[in-house]
Image (cartoon, rainbow, N blue to C red):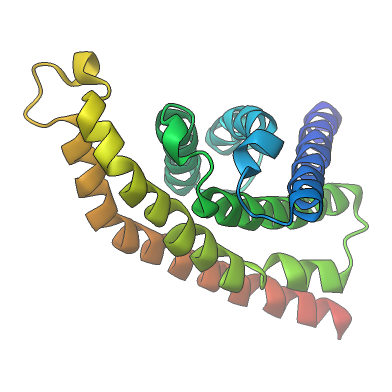
Length: 216
């Protein structure tokens, strides 16, 4: 039990520090250049590393180290990794797009809050305001990260994906191309997003109600 706690504390602390550095890099670039272009150059490599490391969270859920649902965790992690590593990282033409800044800012703010909350919960020092922030900030940040962020960039990347026939060898023999896959994904995105968003709202009600009872 102690070992798992120490491991989770270390993991969440490193993620919190990493996302804080990513956020600082984005803000520094913004203040220096007075432009929201260039977010990938500022923090892209670090965010790629942090997001790849988040694969561990699927195993955390599967092994029962955390009470998260495996399928929902997998959906969130896989979706972000696909967007980041398979589209943004591979299509240089969209790396300067403003949607990258929007997504990275939404992700960074969300993750700094989330991992801070996890760390303080493990240590038993979580304040009520941090719990409220953890289960409220997503109402604004989640839609911003999805619609003017991830989906907008995917739309911008489609012509380049089609032009290069990206991942043609991997999709060889399948009934669709990667371009068609991304188009289908864009159609499904709002529905997948809504299911996750509603789950977070349900989770929010339970957590804030529990937090209120503690106060009383």
